[in-house]
Image (cartoon, rainbow, N blue to C red; front, side, top):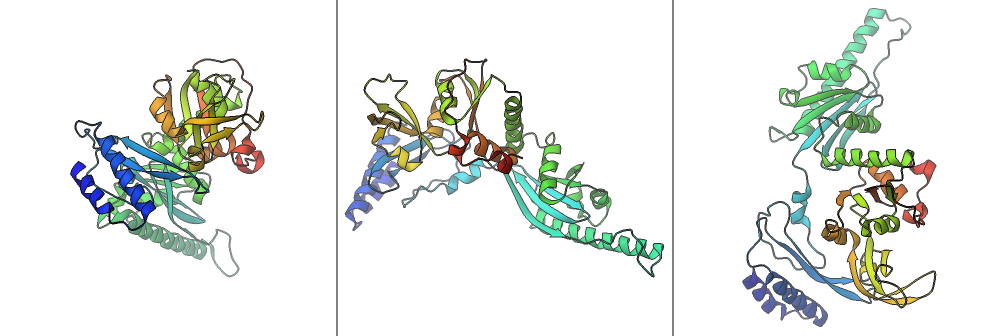
Amino acid sequence: MQKKLLDELGKASSIQSDSNRQSVEEAIKSTRERLKLYSKAPKNGLVVYCGNVYSEDGRSKKRLTIDFEPFKPVNHSLYYCGERFNVEPLRDLVEDDERFGFIVVDGYGALFATLQGSVKNVLRTFKVNLPNKQKHGGQSASRISRNREIARHDYLKKVAETAKNIFITDDKVNVVGLILAGSADLKTHLAESEMLDQRLAKKVIKIVDVSYGFGNGLSEAIRLSAGTLGSLKYVQEQRLISRFFQEVNVDSPKIVFGVEDTMRMAEMSLVKTLVVWEGNDYARLRVRMPGLSEAENVIYLRGGASALCARNYKDTKSGAEGEVVESASLNDWLLENHKRLGMELQLVSDKSQEGFQFVKGFGGCAGFLKYAAPVLETTFNAKDEGGFDLEADFI
């Protein structure tokens, strides 16, 4: 790779734009210097990102170099130069290998979905209007029953055909397991009938009764199948965040939430398990300000790239100004330092209902404490974390 970078450095000299040429050359040189820290390639390969990160107003920039060994082996070598970091080759690494299919079927319609890792994906839905059991004028009970059975048969046949089109690709089942859910006996009839492709019938791992159809029925089916889906990130997140909600409900002294309050506890090594939303845009800044200790100089600021590029900081309460001497994405800093602080780090998504409520209502950051700690003056405000409304957002 060093030879490849040297060749690219030579090619960069032909870039006409002075600013672009300088940026590319500096990035390549920084990458080459970073590679010198490795005597040999790590077991799973090496990923290096290097470039300039600009503030939102475009007035300031910061050199950013990230290198790490992925937790799964990378299967190919890639050099990419562009306006943005290319993370596509890493997407397959963070996806769970297991993908489960769901069919929610009742007397009002059907839903087809998959669950993989923390991603729930509804693929198709359709509604149905089955005849009821009430007698209509001029029709005998036997004729009504016969018409109803024909309609149910046609409906289940459509469900089975749709399932085949969705869950079979190139004559192979594309899910490791299939879960059937519904509020009546239609799901059981589907599983036992010959209409369901036998390749799919063999993949049915659970049949569950749910009280609702469509999206709400899917959420309930996932919850009721937790024992079967125990290794999935989505289910693990649900369990973890549900446990946090239970502690909140009883006003437990062994939890803390909100970025600033939680991080104060974390940096005092009082947190046992830290739960953080993977999409948070907080930066951790260390500011040199007169009259403050090193611990008091740590600031947590929202704003993504603009916060990372900040050179100066002004305290809104005191008006005091200081120089930013160190900055890092909060999640990146936690990944590097959580073991030093003696805590377990759990990154969660907002894909589930529980995850969404956690982000909207609690700032996407909370901690389970090692023991009941003294009450600190809280700085958390739910409205600052995205306008959370108790009645509108918390179900």
